[in-house]
Image 1 (cartoon, rainbow, N blue to C red):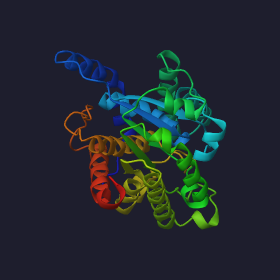
Image 2 (image 1 turned 90 degrees about the horizontal axis):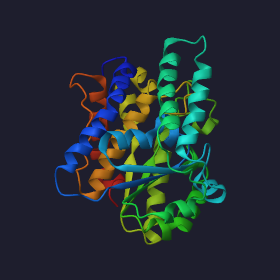
Image 3 (image 1 turned 135 degrees about the horizontal axis):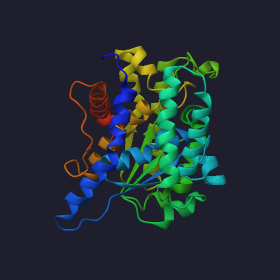
Length: 316
């Protein structure tokens, strides 16, 4: 992969996202009315950093909402509830802005994106903060529910995650598809992870195996259509090709995604959701990316990760 300043290109894409949304609305209004596709997110800061639901919604036109809380596992989110993606995004933005004072160019670029997220969260009309997970899952009929556990939960507390999913299964069955958001291994050059998580390849493998076990648990609990979004596998494909490029997918803490990392996650989720619903020609990514750009490379990585994972990590 080419080494690049993807943040600058990503910022330009985000700047035109509202125009894209307006054009899509205009285009769809010209034909017969179609039911809106609804996607609900359940997770923590790996979901709300850089407003992943919003990135997916603005690029594809699906309607997204979320129940999230920083540091939450599925079990703790079930027990304690969420605090809303928009509110969490504001907290992230404030933290990034504070880190950028007197910092290097990368931190300032991260802060600029954080400023945009904060502005979106404070000026746009946001849904009410989702606090009770059961109420969130039961309040509207959704086509897809995207489920993300604590970043090391599928390795460290897998049994707890399985039990939480069994409890939630009656509500998750109401969605047409449950998508498991299989996350990435840390950049351990920056983190202070436990010793048994410091082997990046081993952690990535353990996370993938954990989400596969979660899928089996949901199937046993009567959830019929399950897909795994192999975001962690996409991160590993980038690492295999260019380690410096892989590091650009992380925020400065080595755990959370940078805006570029969120972009890659959104591309994987887009392909997973569209394929699972059988609507690939309808749910399209409508932000134009130059063919020779590095974001185009990441879109291709997302495609390869989804295609490679299809037999064991896709539709189950």
